[in-house]
Length: 316
Ligand code: GYE
Figure 1 (cartoon, protein in one colour):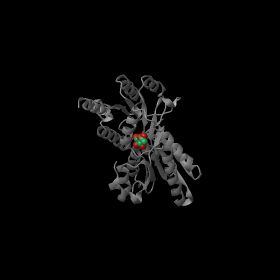
Figure 2 (cartoon, rainbow, N blue to C red; figure 1 turned 180 degrees about the horizontal axis):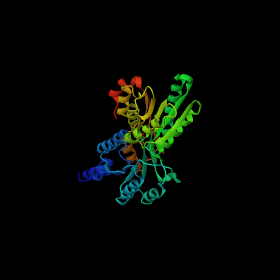
Figure 3 (cartoon, protein in one colour; figure 1 turned 135 degrees about the vertical axis):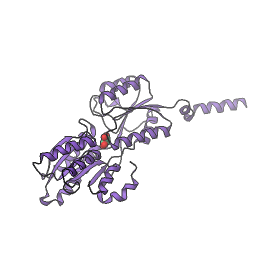
Figure 4 (cartoon, helix red, strand yellow; figure 1 turned 90 degrees about the vertical axis):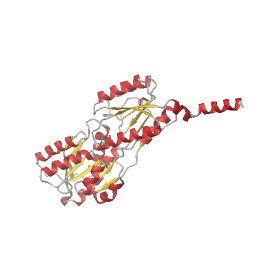
């Protein structure tokens, strides 16, 4: 009897759930900031998923500054968290701090944005969207639009995301790769709007003031900048979505509302709801289970004609 009870107790102690209960896994997460609707949805998803998974989340907001992210990562290392995850604001400049994490034996997961490091073993895995493909999707839509335009030509202005960030670099590259098939599509101007509404509006105002050539199409690297630009276009007495066609990326609620109102033509989906997958990865990585080096998210393209029908189904 005594023996049986002891055996039972030993079995219970070895159950992973028991250990999880005894010492919850600690995840240090360094977020880019709160620059866009996408980012807010991403943060909410991560916080919610951590709660549901019983993972202790140490969350730091870097306010779009790499130095703040480096500080946060160093503080996670000092606190000896079980695993670190972060969404790197820019691609380069991470080698040193990632080497520190590796030396401390703390695994690192990249979420949403990629890094450029000499040694890829400095992170375990990267989960996020294929930004080049998103840029290509926007480019394909622009080609189709040009085919219907008088003379087949389109003068394009581009609002880029944060300078040096993976989504800005890749979305530019993917778009250019596709539109170069037709020389009648020309990018007149291209500048960073830092992924925010305010900056998107400001830069679009400057584009409109230049007025050397008629602008036919705006390509914005995210919906927030497109929404800011819509305001600038209206203030200039033009009709967004008609006088100037607009294609942007993310697929946030605000974009669907703008499409419903006829002010935005198309949004390319980029899914921010990475929380549940991240928590599973955190567990697997800490348990030293093998995980894929690159995990992509599947996404669609939504045009204005389906906006009213899709809007109620949107989760962000
Ligand atoms: O598209 C933008 C945000 O990295 C995918 O960052 C993310 C981008 C997203 O600010 O809205």
